[in-house]
Length: 208
Image (cartoon, rainbow, N blue to C red):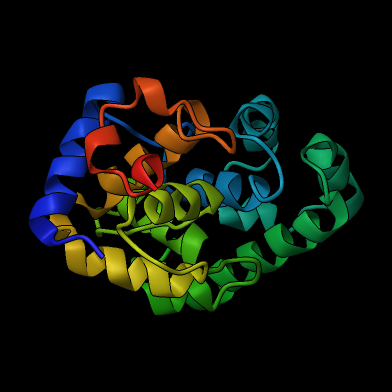
């Protein structure tokens, strides 16, 4: 495993590819980001961003969404895939926000992951991007990129989150995750473009 100093060098190299990395889910507040992140499971950010404008016009907050008709909700989110499961999750999440948090999105990992349809990855996205709490979301791109680089040696998201959290300063968790995600989408894809990667000199995969 790399040292914190090596991790800083790797991140600096990746940030040259992806300056000011941020989530690509379009949102205006924590509620919208929570909804969008739930919809992004097994879908693309682009597809979610096509769906959410109409969805947010119809259901602008948790109190309105909690009273939504399931079939109407399913129609609006159909193109994101797994629409019945996601509709149930969105309804349950909104109803729990109203019942337990006065309709507001809570700013804690435990409270967020207690909501229907919300796991650690989703909670970390919302904490880091909408609530000002450092979060380190680990998705398939983060798993692939950080294992190839040699920053971690695990396919378990929770383990990887913990290991990266020890290597990376807490204040940089959110942007680091965004950087890894963009790198996994654009350069360190399943068939990686190692020859153009600025982190290649420090990458285990490139030198195996």
